[in-house]
Image (cartoon, rainbow, N blue to C red):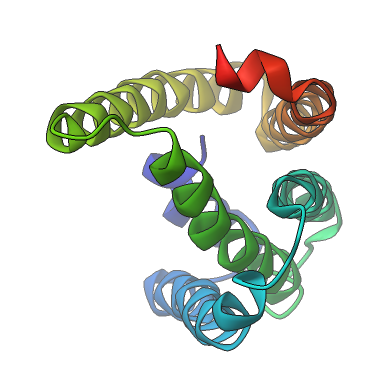
Length: 167
């Protein structure tokens, strides 16, 4: 939700375009390094669904921590938290999703998922820009926090009833 207006937020806390780039670098580097380090471990986790729930809770914490960013240094804290959340979520989600893909329909199944992800992200970017413009970044971060919290709670409900996933 913050993607298209990221640099504006960084400027509001006293940073410039280089600080925005460095903070994004911290997020991506954290995601990449942690993902590399834990993905082998994730292969051996019995209930991978729990890692999805944990990652959504981490996303909620990361989004909430934006409320406490007051300069370009504290900006790095949410970036690291969100990087770790991404590192946990991406491999395990892809592994679980892959297990539900129909043979000989792999491309269209992944295409459907990717299309949906881009469409949802498009609307999230639009909504995030609107919220920040009309109500400020604090409301946007609270909205992002609540959305992540809801995702975690919905995931708990879905994974408790695996029959739902198999239908």
